[in-house]
Image (cartoon, rainbow, N blue to C red; front, side, top):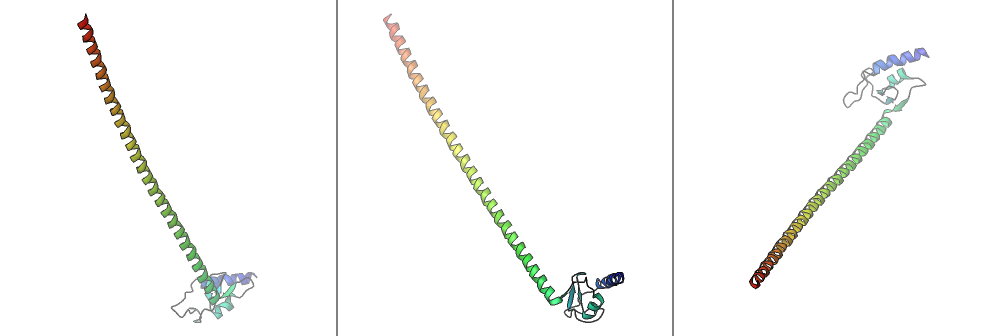
Length: 153
């Protein structure tokens, strides 16, 4: 069994140098098309490479099936990312709208407060002026009565 592992390790070393060449998808070592995929080494295999990799612990899948699974996984991941992106954009839009509403409410509150302060100030001066007029009338009556008293004496 140890010999098998060392053989698999030696083959794995050569597998890491494999590349898919152009549209032909040929194994550079055997010049055969890739037809399988090694799940253990995450590499495509031609029929000859498969013979080198044979073993009970080795997981192999048809390249076409593996590619379909990978394409589906990428599509699923992309859908998840797009949905997440939309969700984030919606949350940002809601927050932006909420902040705008808060800003509008704050402006309205300050406007109402300003108007209320102006009303209070106006009422204050109206009352103040009326009291001053009333005070002048009272002083004038007192002065008039004082003159009448002085005339009688």
